[in-house]
Length: 230
Image: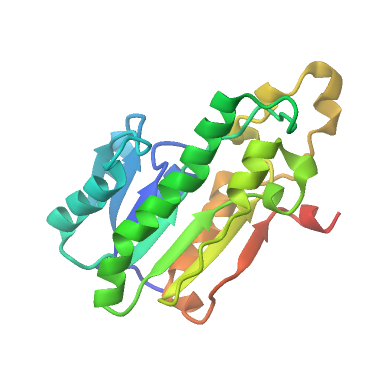
């Protein structure tokens, strides 16, 4: 098990769900975590650890650049890991029913923000000749039947890079993901129960971020209890 001692890690969506689970594991393994979220962070989760919380709406202009600059100001010029965890679901809309506002919201949070953050951290990673980027996508990127058109499109896009390492963690549906509320009672039986927890996904993220995965690059890693084989 690789140590994250003195490594600087940026985690988006750190206040709940997969992001919070990832933050807790990284802190327990010695990382300096710069957590970003719109919602307040449960402070007890960072007790005694090296943690900085940056509360911001990353869809705002320049917010990504300013967040990375704040991380560098706090922990120095080297950023070892970016974990793009924050994301939202759509309303399971098809191409002919999706609202423009829904499309723009989902694409902005799930695609535009991660790309902006990657662009912001790359200069540091390139200068220090190393780093790892982990983007949390979804099994929906592989199957349009899993979500609506906006969500499926946003998580299926990959950004190629000549640096370092970039990998994708692709969790299945989880009860904590907010999907339950989007289903009516009549189709509730269609929601797959794959018994995946936030910790399950977070452990995969931490592995991809670690030196144990230093030769793992360009991987789409499902965390779905074999759901993607169906």
